[in-house]
Length: 143
Image (cartoon, rainbow, N blue to C red; front, side):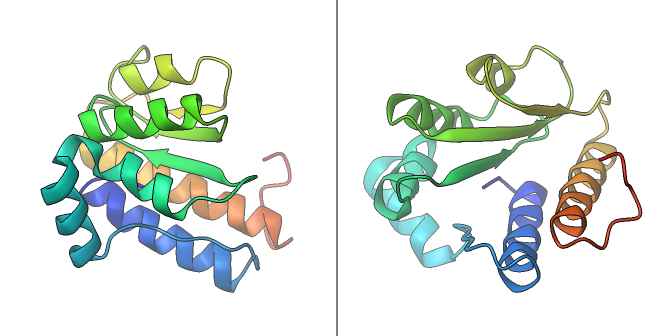
């Protein structure tokens, strides 16, 4: 899950995980879902509400946020912590951003940049490399 460009990355990666890696994956970028949950629960809670409604035991949540500071991604991380769901973060900007702090015992992929384009491209590249590694087509043997 993510906002803006990060939401686009989530969509792309979700499709590739399902189609290529055969891993059930969903994202929450449908406008009717996003606007309904935002209207009924507040924009800062729509991601946590989507997780509440759609997640299943054993799911891994991937939270993508260039800044790591958006209230809705922090809310999603809090939901994961409160409900014992593992999550991975993909962030940039400050190394000690709020999302990374929430996931202090988990896996965090942080990009040392303040450029949103560089951060988002790095997130997409890393996530697609992971998928290639899962399906055994990666040229990056040390990933």
